[in-house]
Every structure is written in structure tokens, then in C-alpha cells.
Image (cartoon, rainbow over all chains, first blue to last red; front, side, top):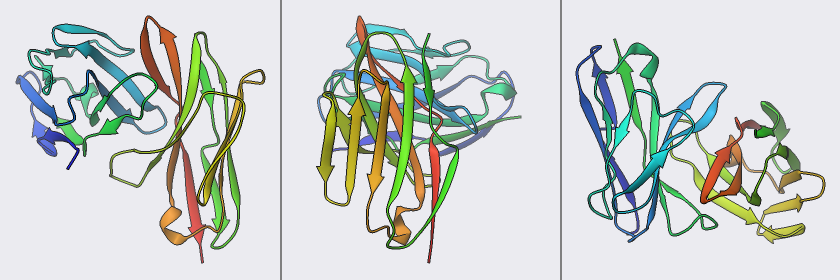
Length: 112
Length: 111
């Protein structure tokens, strides 16, 4: 089954404690992105990747890092999480910019 | 810059027809997506319009006017399960094909 898998689904952490949210897709897609979704603001792109070792900033990259060492995986790293990073995070992949994006099930992160 | 507008909330009755509008002002426009998102779940693809006109897919249709910067999603024969948020997203060509989302329209279908 074609899917994007994110882990964990839920995470509560404390300010400053480094964390990684994993994302994996099994569709051999080149394009992968991370979004955060906040009430009233919609989905905002954090980082994107066009292929292995090719990543760039989206609209809200501050406080986040990504890596793309393999085509299937695109982890999101928060080196020093802060409460304003409390949000619902989605990973997505697509075969191209004009093709539908497939989203993971989301990670609800709370930073206290 | 880029600006995408859609109504925050709409209500409709089961069996009715509802039209959700989306207006946009962006540079490097390629096409427009519509996604459906049930509460607490991932967005799922509904449609993609590149050319002007209406694309019909079962109970759902999507329209695009590139010259007017306008799109709408038409849902017919509404069912309770259609209660969800509907996200308009513009595909922009800025070197990389970038996807920019509107804030979404929450649709509540009542019996």
C-alpha cells in the first residue's frame, strides 16, 4: 500500500530537549516536504526536498533542520524546541510539483 | 508575495449543493489543488486544475479561471461524511514547484 509514515503520532516534550520526527515514503517519490498546521494559519511549509541531498527552506524554517540521505526518508529535527513550535506537523511526498501530494498521518507536538 | 483567500466556515444541508470559493494572487502560478481534511486527519487529494474550466469527478467538481485568479469546489448531493475542511492550494513555479495552502474552509453538513 502506497503510504507516508510519520512517527511519533503524539509527542510531549520539554523546552530545549532535541527531538526528531521521522518520515518515510514507499512510493519512490523525489519530492518531500514538511508542513506545520496551526489554527487560523493553515498549512505552512517548513522545508522541502527535491531529491537526495537537495533540501531548501520553506516559509517557516526557523528552529528546524532536515536531512535527505536516502530517497525514502526525510526526518525533521528540532535541535532546541520551544513552546511556539507546539503544532500539528505533516510530512508529504509527491512524484512532482503538479502531482498530488500524499500526506502522513501527522505528528501532534506539544513543547512545555 | 502570495495571497490565497477562502471562507473560514460554511454550513449546508444533507442532499444540497455547496460551492466553496478560493481566490488567489501569486506569481509563477502553475495550477490549483483542492484537498479534503477531516478533523485530526491528513489532507487527501480531491482535484488539480491547470487549465481554465470545469473538471468533474463524481459528486465533486472544480473550476478554475486563471485570468480572474479564482477557483471553486462544487460538492453535490452532500452527505454527512462531507463535513470536513477543504483546502485550496496553489502550485507555484519558483524554480522548485512550491505548494502554498489557503487557511481552509470548514464545511458542516447537517441532517
